[in-house]
Image (cartoon, rainbow, N blue to C red; front, top):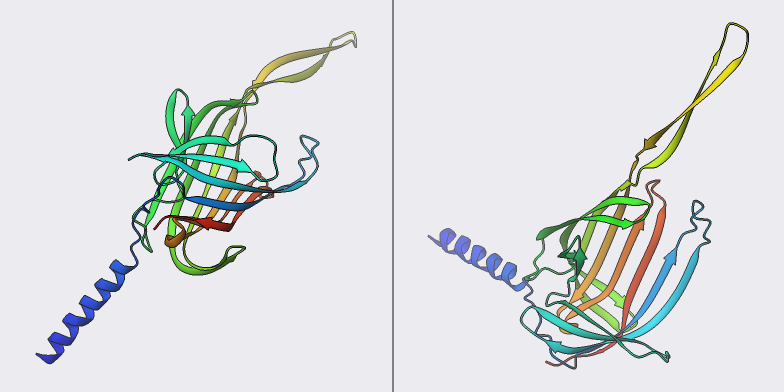
Length: 249
């Protein structure tokens, strides 16, 4: 009997601990503000003859309006003469845009409620994203890894770490290729024949994302987003780190 009671309380304690790790959607309100350091690193691209780049920005994000499904944000770069930019995002901080005439979510780092072990998938196809690309499919799988300490300019936090990995696959627009052949006649003359054909290629590359979400700040305090060329070499890395914040309770 004692063993049964002990086992029951062990199960109850384990269930309570699991529930305590579940993070619900934050109560974001107008006036909540976050300041970030933003760094972009771009590798040199020999195909496009562009050099490697690195730049740093500092900007402030403020909540202007909150509805059931959306948040209206104002973003302004510090020490800039330009006015703030306004953007509408999902209530879970997801980003969306029009693709092939339909609204599609293109980034979803947070999917509440959060709990270690939870995962979700994001996939979308875009036709003609550029003149050189006929279509592109982007796939990402997000996983809640667990709790982890992270240090950013705003301080040290206990955060929920979310990782995502995936790939992009592009079908390049057909290009004209030339095929040549030569034949020699009985009198020794050489005839060169040329024919054109459409050449179509597919190329793929990888994607990686990682976010550290802190309940008390209502948003992630750090994020890293990377994309890779089909060769596996790094194309671009974008890093955001929280510098300060002011949110309602």
